[in-house]
Length: 514
Image (spheres, rainbow, N blue to C red):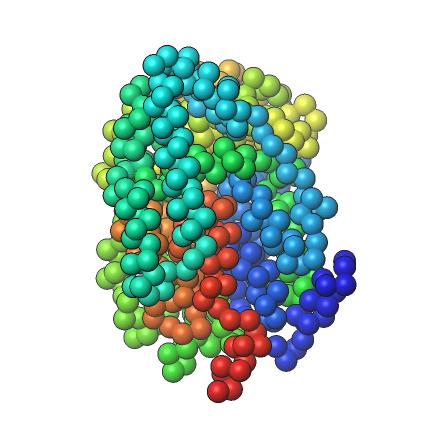
């Protein structure tokens, strides 16, 4: 550790420094904790589960390693920034390996589109599907790049607190024509349905229906092209463990098995938390990485909430949920790439069933994750680790997942066996599931929604729960359900946006004394 980092660690461990409690140890909470440590705060992270990571937790079963949640790592510089704040280098702790292709999109007819960072190969894939699509594809990429520059670089790390912040963003939203849906924008440039699907499905990675979310999210395509899609060797958990190590090296600490049941408020200010055990922990500020809908509805007394009332929380339009089947095999399926999207026979109609009708359809589209394609150590020798994820309705559907989970898993397994994993049932060794009910019960997500409020135009930026609570002083929000939104880049940026509304510890003390 260099001299700067040693000085930081000593200063951050100062028992007289003001205390920041961080609720939740997902990527947003861990990133916020690093940035708080760097600003001189005394930091304690409180995690409900028995290990860090939140939705990015790691599950070990019989020699297989399963990353429970996010697996597509983009924008490495946001991680490098965090390591730099601790006086360290990301590359010294974690190896990020660039994937090629980034992912494969398999269409229902068996054709596929290999999505990569190679411009020539991408154009070849586009022209193979539609020989006339070259100019339209170039126009789409140019527009996605503009959305990246205006939506990501300009607005992504800026917290939206006052109405003036919204007005400042209006010119950029107009330039991006942000009132259009992502799919409508793609369809403006590309006519072939396969290309429209392959270049619009990315919003599903952050919980958004391509037919509803703003076209600003075409910036995801630009992010992937500019920075690549990576895998953290050892799994996403290697990044989680690395961030925990940074926090502890800077004088902060993480406490697992510590579920927060109440955020205390005194004279309109957050003053600490009460745990499920009844223990009360006082604090100077509270930074919440928990789901905002759950937080406002369940952790804060209604008498303190004039903006995020129960009625407003309930009125929101929430993202879909996820059904995830984790499984291991006693053989390798080397024809399957690291990331694969298997699209079903319906696209728009299926998404309408999921997002609008809250109906569990008989067909589905799937994301298949095979980390052992890149990292064989994620499974015993000669074996594969998988998870397969299906977007499904959130709990507004009324589905009883205790009854539906196993039949649904069996249907997914049959689909995989008939397409890309022949004879799968003969080679299964490990099998378990996560359903929308688990998102509600274990991850405390309102309505079991996997990504909080759906990133619609009027549920983004200023309209999304603010990084600085609208209702309570000294309460701050980070993570997927606040600005700018879900995905690893989004939650890391929410922690960066926090810096625009939260002073360093010394300044905070002077403000309190005044």
